[in-house]
Amino acid sequence: MTETIEHPLIGVLVGKAEDGIIQFLGVRYASLTDRLAEPELLSHYDGEKIDATKKGRQVISPPNGCGIEYGFIQQSLQPSSFEISDLDSLHLNITVPSDAHDLPVLVFVHGGGFVLGSNAWPQYDHSRLVKLSVETGLPILAVGINYRLGVPGFLTSEELRAAGYKPNSGIRDQRIALKWVKQYIQGFGGDPNNVTLMGQSAGAVASFLHLQSEEPLFGQLIAMSGTSLALPPISPEVAETAYALCLKTLGIQELSETNRVRDIVHGPSPKLWTNIPAYIPLRPVIDNDIVFRGPTHEDFSSGPFQVEAVLPGVKWCRRVLIGDCQSDASIFSYSLMKRQTGIAKAFHNSLSKYLSNSPEVVCALEQAYGINSNTTDEVALRNILDAASDIRFYAPVLAIGNNWPGETYVYHFNEPNPWEGPWKGTASHCLDFAYLFQNFNEYLTPTQQELAKQFAEHVICFIHGKAPFPSRQSARSGAMVYGRPRNGAAFVQSVSPNDFGRREKLFQLAQGVGLDKLNAAVGHFLDGMRPLIDQNRELHHT
Image (cartoon, rainbow, N blue to C red; front, side):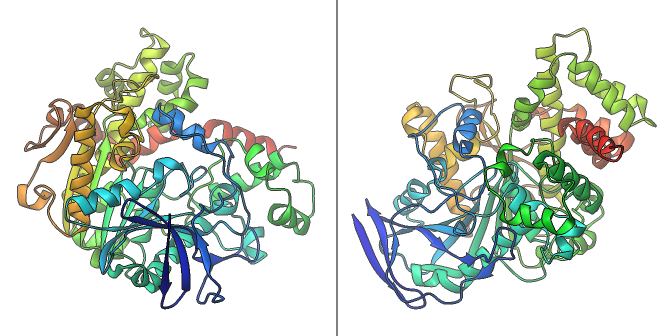
């Protein structure tokens, strides 16, 4: 079925209606003059009826990206294919109850490492979450953002900037989308002054970058399995290295500067995902315009004035809900498996070089997590990922949860992955949103469905400005735990990581070098920076 509305600013839109929920799909929020251009907010529409019953096109990214993410989740939904577009992919999916009026607005930024993702993917469908919000008596309106990824979203260099192309197009897209919501969402039944931004994984990393803006963009933040503490913006120098490597892999390094830029901007789009290896860091870069240096653990431990100095958004983002999955670092296993042979030794060598002045910290970390050459490669890989889960995901949640100047709510998602695959039985990366959006319910037991419902109801409650469970400030410590070591959802009042299914040793280890350096050292190994550095050296010798 379809439903037609007359938006006071946009005009007539035809949406897809089912079971009391209307979806307006593929609604454009910005235009582009070319692949790398700055997004321009759509300030007027041509007045013709807009057919918003079909999903919009995917940005330039791997066509099989949805299947890749199903592999992470270990369960697929209905098979789908997605058209790809250079210029017509900046759009929103808007999901509303049929009688929406001044509802709290949820804006969702998908993850995917800044190289994969689309609001059109079935796992990101918001219709069931919105329907549940109606059933619980706390209706919401949900918006899913499509934004540029990979080369169009995050490639930058001096010569691209000299040609007029600003860095961080993907972040600029998101910011324009948030401004579009402020301007237009009321006509769909949403309250533009009651917006919650939710990001998962890379989407959560991006969400924290928006807090570097002095301009209020949203009132609340939900960060799932990602922070800019764990994945800070790269430096301009690293971005130049990434650019040089992209030129080489695209086979255009010998062209003139003008022709190189022309090829990147106007060349065939398929090679932008088939030729670019995963180790090249295409992600937010410090430009001192919209992306500045990321906040650090030291910043958060230095008090509210320092937090406000690096994240001005703490003045206008009044509340934060933040959490992690018990085995979030499972997402790195897919790249590390290629390096699994002798991985304990490789890990030791990498950390020993990065922490050359603190060999005792390297030794203590390896002992704490059982990382040594006496274990099998498979066990060593799992133990390395346990350490990474604690350092890159759990520790940032605590740093932000304990030191945010406003109100914070902390959760830990420990429910085991129920589906066949290498991460069955663990709370793997991406499992949180698979439960939250209710789209995998047919593949869950009744008990698992109930946990998914509890998780979603807590999120809905937060979006409405209510307390889903005790805040960090009111309880002084403690967090909501979904799954093990208990069944279902339970608020756990404790300061011991063990009570949340985490490990005690982490903060003792960090006393030697600090969490920032420990995170950077582990990140250096996980991100596979060695091949990048080696290839860059080769570039300068050829």
